[in-house]
Amino acid sequence: MVKMAKQDGAAPAASKRRGKKVVDRWKSKQWYEIHASPEFDSIYIGQTPAAEEEQLYQRVLENSLYEFTQDFEDASMKLRFRINKVNGNLANTLFIGHELTRDFIRSLIRRGSNRVQNIIDIKTKDGFVFRLTGTVFTLNMARSSQQKTIRKIVADILTEKGNTLGAKEFIQEMVFGNIEKDIKRIANEIVPIRECKLLKSMLLSLPKTDAA
Image (tube, rainbow, N blue to C red; front, side):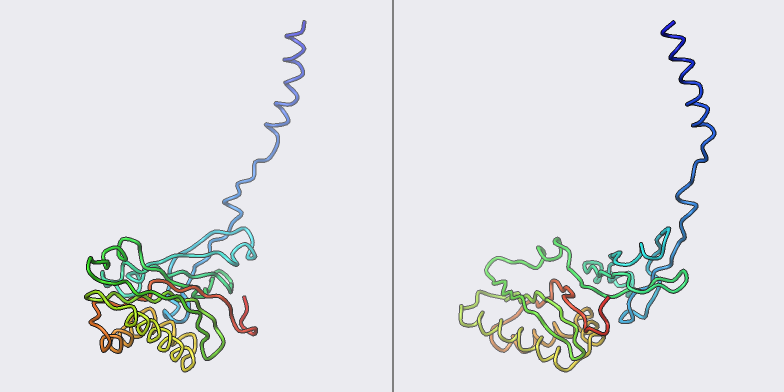
């Protein structure tokens, strides 16, 4: 009798489950096209689904610089974008930083040389604040006084660029190597320089009118 009671009680529940409508969550979502920030001509960089527009904000995408330039030498740089505006099914982004891959950084290190590095916060002419990691790789061993001078050169050039450039121009000069060339040219007067790289950047804050 106990066994029959379990079967009789289970039948209505099973019937209810069969009668309940199953909602396909994927069908309820809309796909959005994502475009890079204006510094990279707002080109298409991917797509993402979302049930509501509000779910898109703050999502972060990572793309290599190679995807923009088609130059294999740029494959070691990762660019990060955050969705900050949505218009219909189009999602626009804000550039929030870059980083060189660890393998590439390791390839720059040599015995008998120095890795002179400093981290500095830079404010652009239009009020964007970035934290940058600038690194100079010397050709030979450098004295501590020379390393100190190199760090000052890096800080001075980055500060000057920030004071004279808006965020768009600053990002482009940083990503496409113009700032690195300026640092290497001047630091090379102190000690022979093998390479200069801005290993990493991170957006810390926006002007109040552009906060997102």
